[in-house]
Image 1 (cartoon, one colour):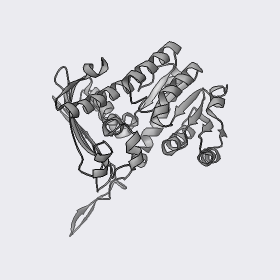
Image 2: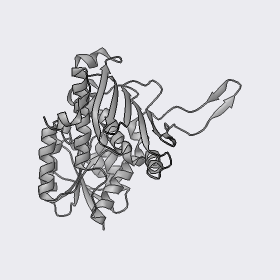
Image 3: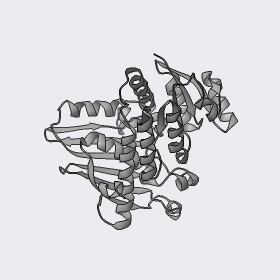
Image 4: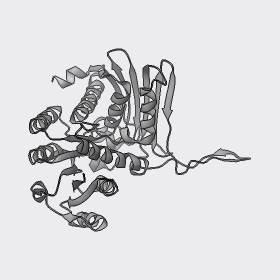
Length: 335
């Protein structure tokens, strides 16, 4: 079975997914849509696909699935439209910035019987996958504490900050998803602290650039997340999971995995400096997992419900900062 894809959005992340689809066995890229003609033409030329409008893709009999890489405020509407059109849907996170809107969207997905996978690529990173496999095999006993470090080399553009939904919904949301995945239990409470330490302009725009979060499950398991928009040494992505019988960790990726020893000391190459280079394999693996789910008729590994719960943790973190207290996830979902 070959799954024929159309990609909606030829920007930075759309190009990443175009490459992933084009290099995945059992997948074929047939169309690209983007209002910027030059961007669409670049993708079409590189991968030999058609340029079509969103209307044309929705009506195309030769398109089995779409990958939504458009601005966040279009995601829910497009998911609903293509679910009703009988297409499988892969959508970049988040589904929407509003929990109520996500819940309404997921109801449409359920009613139509459509397949929806939400893009949380970190679960598909080979090192992180090996870490999870060690946990599942019982190598470290029962999970007790998870520590997630995610630090960007520098802040995004100001115009992105104004429409991203804030650091918790844009950046920390990946760590919220990974925390849920590794803890093995749903998070019950969220306690967050946030500051502006990198760029005062970010604060003026109503956001933060330095945050820490503690997640706690009903049994008392904890996950600690630390994020910043500034890491002068590169793209810092680390995980440590402590269990009753030991611990397992995943370290940063460097430009080369070597170490040089001289009389001046020990040196190693710098860290990779961007998410698109750090997670190349992860993006390819998640598209392959989506194709496998469609081929086998099984649920995708990251669902709309995963998208909803990660957003709920982000909303709880926002409220925790505003209220200066721990916030129950149920309080957010029931609002």
